[in-house]
Length: 340
Ligand code: KG4
Image (cartoon, rainbow, N blue to C red):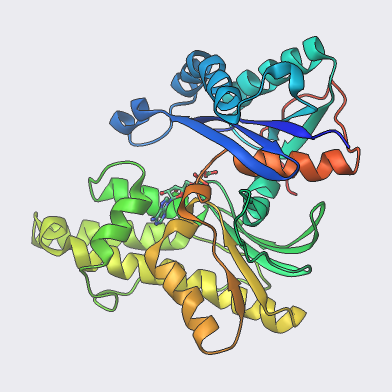
């Protein structure tokens, strides 16, 4: 049998990434991140698409080079079609369509969220990886999404619950901005929280039915708390930043774990995975490990390199779709919003 080479391309937000997978094993994964957004406290869509334009060709070139192959050896190209920022998606999608057409090979659609969930299946040759067995539950938490997904198979996923407003990462980023910290806020809060008291302050937790999440009430409660405290002490944030970060982080993790625990109870599935940018969070990983230590769940936590946006997760999604001959019409447009 001929080797199957899949090129994955990801450009849904502010990372331009390309990866090559051979027969299900990762050969290269190159990402160009965009420092330009730091000065604005969030991703500026226009600047993101311009940076993708600059990065896409060198990043794909480097991924092919590191994999030791030429573009003519590719079996298919898989690209994130959505959800994401439209201007950013268009760069990766147009590039992938052009390359697939010129090479006469199939185009495969990857859903960004599906990619994050399948990050647990990224293997390098010779590596022993413990992969979750189907069906499993996945807590997918990033800057744009917070969802509990039941994963029945590589290409069969059911959304059990999702945020009705802000995502968990977005809540961290916005609260970080209010405190005058940099972007993205998640890693900054993570670091500060390690020196703080998680029980120093309490913030509002949502009371919504079912398995859905909500983080906008917490954000407002945090904002009002800071407004009142800084009236009394203008340097309140500076004096208490560790405790603020730890208490905020604890509230977010309590909210996430409460609904996830409910999902485990309702489905009877105790194989539980974590995915998305917020899965890099130290305390959230600890909360997962505690469930495993207590013998409640079998847990699956992605490697740090696969928590944030990357093309390896897109390429592995494409590999399984290639095996199913699940190809994408060349005229299918990118989409900014979608569920799974
Ligand atoms: O998955 P991702 O790279 O992009 C999206 O698809 O959204 O996730 C980015 C999000 C940001 O909100 C960032 O603050 C958060 O992940 N994040 C973290 C940590 N590292 C990244 N949140 C908490 N703790 C971290 N260590």
